Image (cartoon, rainbow, N blue to C red):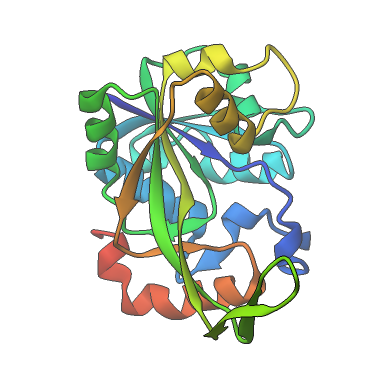
Length: 237
């Protein structure tokens, strides 16, 4: 089965400044590789033969590094935004997308089985699939529950809430693109609301493995620290 992926690599990486003043965020190194190269190697191992990088900020640096993908034995091409188009809007510029394709952020570290994620979506026939991770959020205070008269009716000491969050890895059917506006910025959040309104909700596929969004300096430092000790989880080299 031929597999196609789009990597969203056009963000400015403002949360990672000053690191991203010189390099685009997807080219920030973890171990011996930029995070985007780790992703490319993972996709190749999962049988993806064509990767399109949606680029904007510092696009020429990314293009110079990956070129046409021949170094890795994969086809790499580029979709250049002349202005930010959001998570989903960037897909409007890519004219040769297949019936089903993977879309992911270019700054995440995960051991997700991309091939299984792709093929499960194809078998199910969903319009959109979200890879989701459970996240625990602890409130560091005693929480007071009150009634309409302001009287205490409950108390919770440092409660913990659990959420399913999007990992920034998606599978799309070409049917989803029919919900996109013809031009302009369009985000993942807007598409989810539009699919719900159309009664065509996305399928949420829970994932219990490793996932880290390298968006903040603390997360980037953690990725550097954990990558070498957990390298076998991410790469087969």
